[in-house]
Amino acid sequence: MKKIFMVDIQACSGCRLCEAVCSFEKEGAVRPSKSQIRVLKLDERGIDVPVSCQHCESPLCADTCPVNAITIKADGTGVLLKQDKCVGCRACVLVCPYGAITVDSDTGKCMKCDLCAGDPQCVKLCPKGALYYDDAEVLNSVRRHGKMKVLLKPFL
Figure: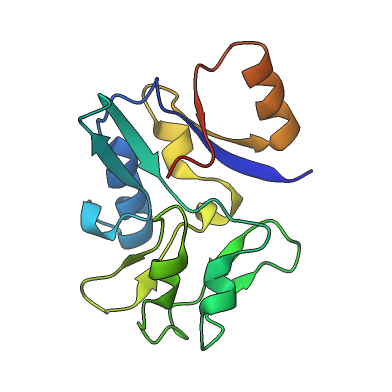
């Protein structure tokens, strides 16, 4: 069964620990600018929204990439961006409906969540339990039974 990443936006406190955890996991240092998850603060709505790649089944980013740096994993469980192939054209940034692809300020190449090879650290360490990564049916069941107020997929 396919696993999906989801967010309970009412549970998110805006602490940005997910950004710190992600950057540490990927870079070995806490550098939120290197995080592959971003927390958007929507003051007009009074909410904080963690934004990450949704690993679409038919990703526009992969279709748009002129050098095929973005591919769907062979087992269909996610979308990978190979930075060594990326030329930094930013076409994927422009077409991502979630705003989940960013540009590494050091390399000029694009970056996005890779779900930590199926074990997303941001989900494990979120102090409010606002991030979920589980089977789609499990998360839909949780939502139907009122254990989650608001799920994000998609939000933007």
